[in-house]
Length: 563
Image (cartoon, rainbow, N blue to C red; front, side):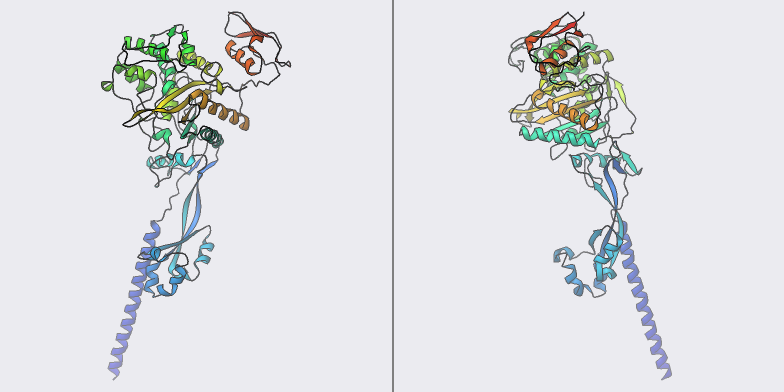
């Protein structure tokens, strides 16, 4: 009997120990599953992103996530009795056939513990890092999200090892300028009933992007292309000058129509609908003469081949990515010369037949206000400048000076504002659709410009997509840029070396180009017949009414120039 009792006791204890071991192994397995699960949680402490002034764009926020192990709850035969609690927050489908259930995200551990209540025994609470994004002012389409988006700055930084290499990364974006650009672009798009719009503003000397706004579901500034229209003319003229194909004093005849190939299948006319007679290079840019630029292209073709022209387009940065820190940037389209027709070079002269991204356009145009140097665009505030000389500095300065007249007397007069001197080039590009060709009555309104005229700080591009009222770039796109720079200078007190003009006060016009001085007076309300210009020079050296004297619109003002 004693032996039987000993055997029974031994078997009982053995079974009990076995159950303890089995429970330990099972629980350890569950714990291991939980540990493996916790390791899979999104807990990457990527670099915080700030703007050029240290303002947060993307930052890391410490949170706590509560997770329930439903398998463990079922193993304890507690699933049915707790099901009513689970169903208060989740449906049957949401908790069916899953192992771990996320109960919630909390600011503190204590909040998570209290919210779990009796479910704590089946749960674990994990510290996690959440990325918080500033998605205002079109920043969502610019920044993107690491591991969640196939485009944007943040995915690029992650792919290139920058996002996880430092605590904070300074971007070149200026949030104040970003906000102003967004608001001004949005106002114009709404006012003109346009289909969308784009703005990119860069520092002229560094290539740092200060603002980038896209009013589309995707960021066309880097992921879509347009035809440049007349915004290409300054670069072609600069190249022709550098190659001594044309001279600064050359004249061109703008008639009613022009056939550059000598054949009737391709006709060039002026957008104004009439010829302008004999004009120089300054007027070619100011009034955007199609006929003059076609004649200049004819002179280029007398000296150089299509292959040479193609290489020049590549030198401007067209047909290839700029290399800016934006995942998803495209190359644009510049057809190889083997695919060109006889009329193709003349189409290119008019800004047709090639597709360039807005970031390519502003980077290429910036060659002119930047002393002839192409500088690689960047979103990184601390990146070293990368530049190359494309056009000679004297040529770039001369063309830059001519472009200041576009706003004073040319196609961008609506961009003129007292006290703010900008220069630039307008463009109007007819929209094309695949398989259809150019769409009648559908246009991109363009303006590329720089500010201020003397020693430019910023270079920018504005694109308005298919405005329903006015559609010329000077009427729709150019005023947007003026409004941005005016507001930014006013709100941030950064007006530098700018003369501010006031109604009823005589301005100090000494040293001004005579054409600009003349237009300043007209904009102040002085009648055209009351402005008398003497001398044959280009610059005002004296004025009949002293600066800052009160004026009336009947005043007669004499501006004197010297050869």
